[in-house]
Image 1 (cartoon, rainbow, N blue to C red):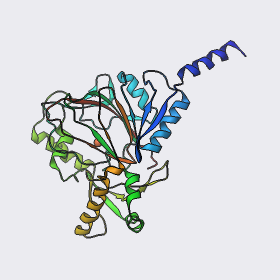
Image 2: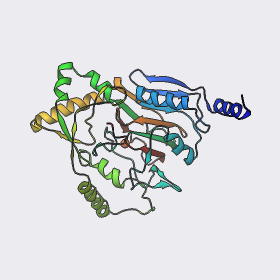
Image 3: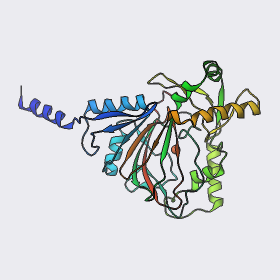
Image 4: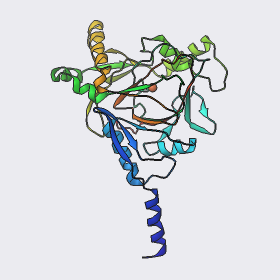
Amino acid sequence: MSTVLDKSAVKLDQAHQDIHVRRYKPRIGAIVENIDLGRPLSDDNRRTLNQALVDHGVLFIREQTLTPEQHVGFAKIFGNPIRKNIYLPAVAGFPEIEVIAHSDKTQSGGTDNWHVDVSWQHQPPKATVLHAQEIPEGGGGDTIWTSSTGVYDLLDPDLARYFEKLYAVNTFFASPKKQHLSDLLSGYDSPDGKSETVEESLARVRDAAQKFPPIEVPVIKTHPQNGRKLVFVNEGHTSHLLGVSKTASQSLLNYLYDLIKTPEVQARFEWKAGDVAIWDNRQVQHYAARDYGSARRRIHRVTLEHDGVF
Ligand SMILES: [Fe+2]
């Protein structure tokens, strides 16, 4: 064997980490342990992580010290980073990393809505990789994920068959909670540090509404990798069901929303600075608890582009 080949074999060994995937909750989530995202990962490690994401829907990795470059590099294991929300500030020199920041200026009152990110567009993002920078000192700001496949499994089979024939309308404007809409566009520190007037925020909302008209989506979809059926409607973006009365639409959606809020299909994560969470945006919904008042909470987010199969 040549010296060159010997060297490459050593290099491969050094890149491999003996990572361990441990189930977090019975129906959703896993903790990845014995992993250092600051060091290289082997092809085998990358396959393990991708498979774990398909199997568990959301992955948690505690206490990682990561540069923005390492954050983006790690996210690339799961897909192609894209800048999804141009209204959020980016990390200097890293346009792919949006900063989700709440401070005393921006207030974090009210409540969130359960949602699939950007499900008001066809082909929503495939996945998201968060890295916590600053977590409220007094606690709070947990994120909760629910398994959309787990929700489907809770349905009575006859009802599931009925829902499989239905379509819903998803829209940027669906949220019944105005707080959510205003937060979505104007509740954060603005990219240039200037605060925006209410009129400017509304103008942006109107622009977005024109650019992204309501879309029709199936109530039940199938995950392209694990083949499991899932409930795709969500409180944040679904306005109504098609082909049924307004009353029936609201009742049926409320029934599904109740299932989405069922603890048995959820995973709640208490953040510490440095923690990383990766979720498959196609098979989970999420909710960020706004229970930390004016405390600071800052998270870096890399969003991964859809791959055209969902
Ligand atoms: Fe979200």
